[in-house]
Length: 251
Ligand code: NAP
Image 1 (cartoon, helix red, strand yellow):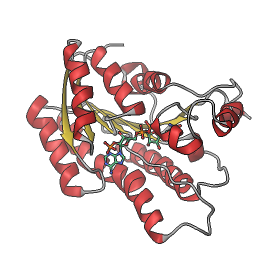
Image 2 (cartoon, protein in one colour):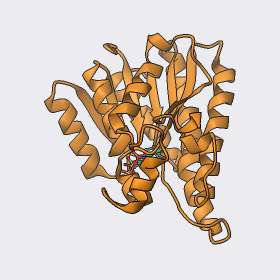
Image 3 (spheres, rainbow, N blue to C red):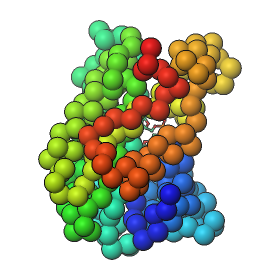
């Protein structure tokens, strides 16, 4: 898969799935813009890409702030002149029983996981139309498809990502922009450390056992699916949410 001449934007590119996807996109020839709030981590990813012959820049961005998202797209165009691929991946988790969440919990999770995707798409789409089309991939989850107890706000937010993805796909189907989601199972990242505990913990082993393949996924396995959805190999694919989940949703 090659992305030479293409420009890709990755939100939540400072760690985990976003970091790995940014690296794979750069290895495949794309110029990459990374976004996130942590400048040090963003700088390290840029350094890793650039020292391996790729081309990347970091733009510090909080995806819940419209002026910062607009600035991110402006900077993408200023650096690289176009936008072809956008991976809207920034997200946070929140655990707890439904009766114990606060309004502030709800707003925090929905602001990042849903408003963040909405604002990102809003400014990405005009830039992509100017570039002659493109591909948007939003990060959903297996819990965008089904529920589990103990994370109602997070799960509702990922169901919302599914709805935004499908609607935007329909709105843009005739304009050369494909819009899809990737729906990871449990993937070994910082988020899963927070969600289920460190390597070897009972919670983590239980979570792995819920996946028919009997293990957690790796960020590189999600990145590979994102690159497929971003590529011309997926030229007739829009409005889907692709599970990458070791069989979780087949149960
Ligand atoms: P992670 O390592 O914690 O990555 C989360 C990323 O989101 C970080 O780069 C973080 O960057 C960014 N982010 C959070 N809030 C942000 C904000 N307000 N503005 C900009 N960026 C923000 O966890 P991950 O597992 O790679 O998660 C990536 C995505 O995958 C999330 O959407 C998550 O819901 C989804 N997902 C993960 C799993 C899993 O099992 N790991 C499963 C299904 C779906 P900064 O902190 O630098 O801002």
